[in-house]
Length: 152
Image (cartoon, rainbow, N blue to C red):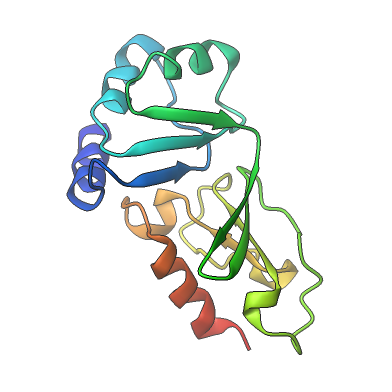
């Protein structure tokens, strides 16, 4: 499984790409699993998850491809506004009469759901975990397109 995820990731991500990983980077044996993290292409920004313990953070800091580790982050792309967090967060009041570009969209990765819209009825919450995307990372452009198709 781990090697398949590495291959899927590296088939999509280019070495110069910035990738935001929304937590729980690895589970299980740190010494064994960090070798998979070191194989990943891109400049990886980690939004800390509940399984990203202090000891795992110490391992991440030794990886050539990890450029940032944070608890949560605001992100703007092509006039769209996002809040990146491991956990689903209600960051918008979901007033449907306003354009999508004026709203804050929560991107999260905690639930391991296969449905990226699992919490969409609670607010503008979109799941980016690999479980929801066939064990592949998803681009911000794909996220925006998915949301635009259901946002009314």
